[in-house]
Amino acid sequence: MGKTLVFIDAGFLSKLSKYFGKGYYLKYNIINFSKNLSKKEKAFCEQIFYYTAPPFQSEPPKKEETKRREKYDQFIKKLSEDKIINIKEGRCQRLKIDGQFIFKQKAVDSLMVMDLMKIPIDYKEINKIILIASDSDFVPVIDYLKKLNIEVILYTHYSKKRKSNLSRSNELLKIVSRYVEIKKEDLENSK
Image (cartoon, rainbow, N blue to C red; front, side):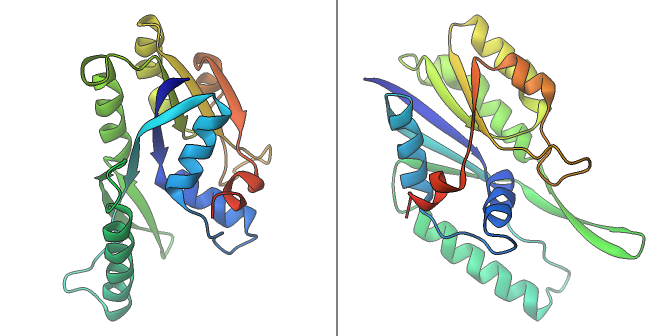
């Protein structure tokens, strides 16, 4: 059994959890989820890289923002107790569009690309990785890894509806070694 690394776009996985839960987030264990996917690939999960962003905070933070940040900090503290997981944080940007606030993660994909580029240096024995994402930003780095004989398996889920919250990039599907659709059971079986 070989070793693998698991790279998780937490924003994507969060949307997927809410989608499967029909508006409510499913409860599951990220570490068990990653280890289960690794087992499916007949590999030992060596390390999990989890990319996220703390919730937006106004200046000064509103009461609800402070509560949200406290919950986030508790979650991150608990998650980081296990040495298998490496948490990388970007930031959350708030934009006002047509009178509505929307929130976007910033720098998360860049952090993931940087770590993916370092695999051949930091993890010389790794020749297979699992990527949980849906974004075409990863196409160039996946192409680079494939040229170094590192197999990139994409675990994703997408909706065929136009303007869906779960869209995916055709370029991403074409460049990976192969892709596997994440199912609700994958999360439910990781409690």
